[in-house]
Amino acid sequence: MKIFVVLGMALLFCNSLQAQWLGLETPGLPRTDSGEPDLDAPPPRTSWGTPDFSGLYSPGGTRGVPPADDKIQPWMQALIEDRNRNFNANNPRNLCLPNGPGYSHENTEVGTRRIVHSPDMIALLYADLKYRQIFLDGRELEDEVLLPSWMGYSVGHWEGDTLVVESNGYNDKTWLHRTGLSHTEQLRITERMTRTSYGTIEVEAIYDDPGTFTEPLEVGYEMRLIADDEMMEVVCNEASEGTSHYTGDYEDVEADLIEVPREILEKYVGRYRGVYIDATITVDVTLEDDGKLYLTRRGSKAELIPQGETTFIRGGWGYVFSVKDNGDATAISEVHVSGGWTFPRVEE
Image (tube, rainbow, N blue to C red; front, side, top):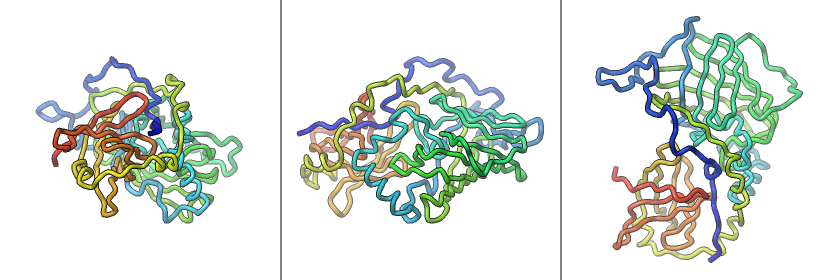
């Protein structure tokens, strides 16, 4: 059987095994009587009167995240299908390039961000050493952007306790979603950010790109405060050999497809949970009426293509089930160039 090395972006990353400052208490964080972080406490305010967005956050609770098939123009649909056939190997993140607007809503290993809040600007610092600036000094976006950039240009103003951010000037090299949805340089994003509690910033965003979408795409997500922790750097370029392992496409995989009896697949159905780099990951494995196994990870559902009775491929990554003597699965390993990240089976 031909062996395919299937990778994801975080496979390219190298992290320190021993990290400084992890576990230190976050200064000024409200706490319960038992000493636990009270993330339901009222949101803090700055000395100049606005809600204070300062803190360390990770995105989650995404709603309406792209791709939204019914709003994507045919040329982009065809491009997405072409990219999926070779496991999205040309994802800019796989080439150690900035994730652009995708940083906002994607809960990934580089999605952690530190927000630094001043009267005239909000800066978002990302774990992979990229940054975003939101200017609050009254300047306006330019209609004609002479130098499109990876992270775009952003200005903001306050409407009550909600920060309204408008952004444009993106180049067309970034993806909005890891499964191949990109955009044109016409992309304009409007975000409304409200810190509803100490631990949560609610974000409602509109992605307006007439070159890609038939109508504006609405996305909602949360930025959740990370308490008593620290952001450690994730440097993609430290793993220079990663992209050289991308080989083959779905047609090659399907040529090696084997039949796995339904009674075996039934023993893999369930929920699995484990840690991947610095995030807790939950995956759900289901067996559909078509007799195929599917895996859902962070809201993205795709077929597990069998390469053996316990070995599968999904969207560019490998998955291997650990089983008992009776065939019942006890864990699933998500295989990257860095090895297999094991998620034990959980009962819920």
